[in-house]
Length: 536
Ligand code: ADP
Image (cartoon, rainbow, N blue to C red; front, side, top):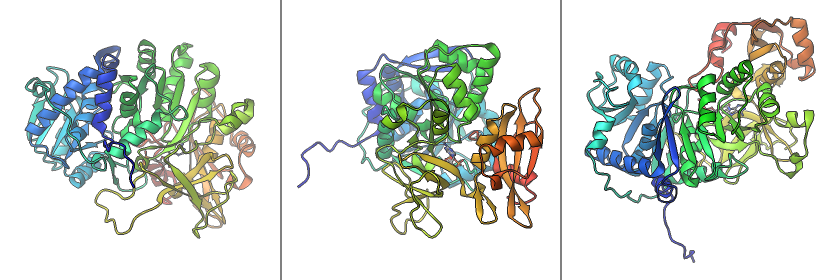
């Protein structure tokens, strides 16, 4: 016997429809120039998305087609986020920070039928064309008058297209398992691979993100995704904001400290999230100007391990709780967040800082296990590392175009981690970044976190270099705080307080800057190429 409840599908368009119907006047603010925002209500965003849906259908977009987007966080991109899956097509977000050659590869792989691109990406579009990309059409998302004809086939001005439609369009129903979004991994450790999200996975992920132990969105919040819309669903912000009817603030491409601070204050942002690099920029600005954040009540940090100095600064100086998390493109991406349980509520001082170095615990909907190289599950003791595997309704089973030979029950993440008795995860490393020294694995993340606790160290990356006796030994590459110096001996003594003796780096190197990937993570492949003597 089946239940007698209605079989309404979980659809992305239903999120927007809900926001429009029940939170229609709640603001969506889009920054169109530094210090200048334009404000819509959710109702207007829904109306505009319906007109975009009509325009896309007129252009010939059909269910199942991939429609690319190449844009920063602004209202037009948000509308595309809803309009494309709303007509049964697949919203394929492209990362403009990737190398053009990678974009060409991804566009060929996805076979997008058209592209919505920021007018400011025109030079990139021209480069793509010179590399052989041919798209049936491009819609330029720009302010009126900003667009000018690109070289890529037929082109349209976004606002002109919308002006031709009347918005009398009902969001159709689709099976909830139907594909809604496509995002390629940023290729940090290899060729980018496509992950296809469904309507169902997107809605369930948004519901999870909104829960109090996750990012805790409510209709009283003003939420700011600093994480780009092209980086794995912007960690669920655009969907979860609509789901609860929160005010949504979109920063455009302006993510440096001063502009971000002005936006956080002006729009009374209560919850925001992004990669550590962005928050380090904001922290430096706030420190230099001796400024206070007056509205923020939760800062999400993900995509890479959260530097301890960042946690301490925001919690101690700004009184803003920091919530590190773990996830990947393949996990939609939010799969673990550092929210306390009753047992952690009383933690203070060093004990609390040590706890906050972990990467989170799984919410309902995400299950995890750690296995050793022989496939045996390892102890949940907070010490024994294992290969992290995950499963759940918003975890990728197989990649775009990958043959689905057998059902994949657990997704192998490629990360090595520990789990403690309370269920808190700690990422040790990506398998490819682990340093294999003799019989031991050295966690580059652990040594980096320890180095970052030294006041002179601003950025740190640890890679292996070949060693005839041990196989590999660690090299610590650092960027120092302006005007600060530190000796190797001092560093060694400092690190010895935090990591095991065999993990202490054999070599130290100070550089002016570290290379970063398109999603704002230290590019270890590039570091190994330059400093690892070919060990990458
Ligand atoms: P890519 O794999 O192309 O860099 P993702 O954004 O999907 O793109 O990156 C996911 C990876 O980022 C994870 O597999 C993990 O290695 C790393 N990562 C994410 N969150 C954390 C964290 N809290 N601590 C350490 N590493 C993290």
